[in-house]
Image 1: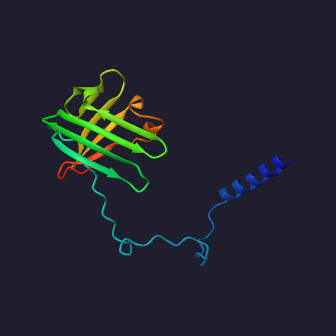
Image 2: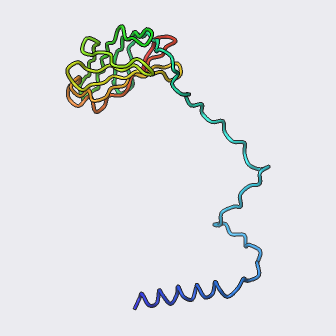
Image 3: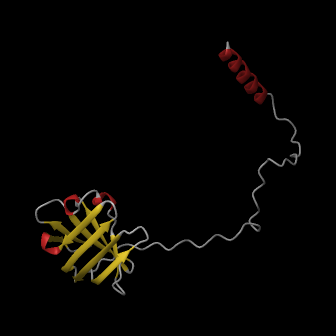
Length: 171
């Protein structure tokens, strides 16, 4: 019976909508009603957009970093990296993740499999791949399928390392 009443109410609404337009009445001032959109002159100026990094440049990667980092949670690491003309000359990374484990990477465990547009190192006896690319003044060092290079559950919490090309610092 409830469905019949709902259908009857819906039919009444539809018939009333087809009956014709009613004369427009001025809107009543209601505290709960949304305010009208401000005119163009009243709108605040749009905020400046954050500048996004541009595309990866098509040039050989050049970076030298020997740095350590630590955040307030105790996540810490160190990176030694030297890439000249897209050829990796030195690479060593250590990351300690509190209550999860540690990850350790060394160039002797890898072979370079790509140089342009981004550098790629593949593990000699495994699936681990380390990729490096430019993002503005920073170089990103990212890790993929490197579970065997880590203890415990550390790989699940491993973030890419960012190295600053200007001053050799990292985060």
